[in-house]
Amino acid sequence: MNNNKRRSCSEVPPSELDSILSCTHTKRCLLKAGISTLDQLLSLSISDLLNIRGIGSVIAKDIVRVQEQVHSKAGTDQST
Image 1 (cartoon, rainbow, N blue to C red):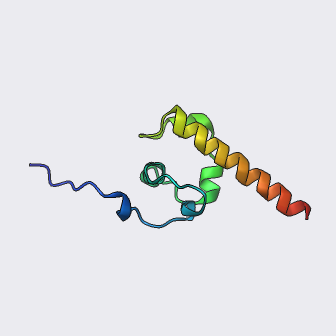
Image 2: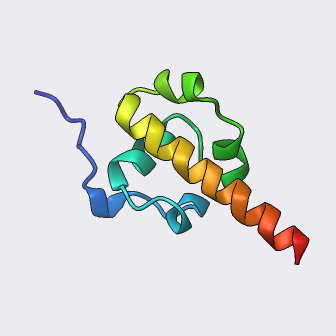
Image 3: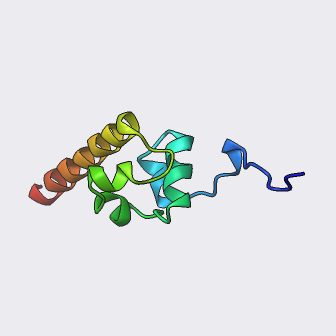
């Protein structure tokens, strides 16, 4: 008998990623891989993302889009 409990989506601990990622599956995969801060997320390349269990090309592309939005917003904030 397997005593490992699967955590429900509501049991994912809060992290810095909550403010930019809406998909609980994505956040859970990143947290399992040790990615819990925005800086860590922004440092990942698409190939890094694809090496994370549970993240395929569609999710990786979504994360890259979020990374680009964060970088764009940061650039906009600095110019004002």
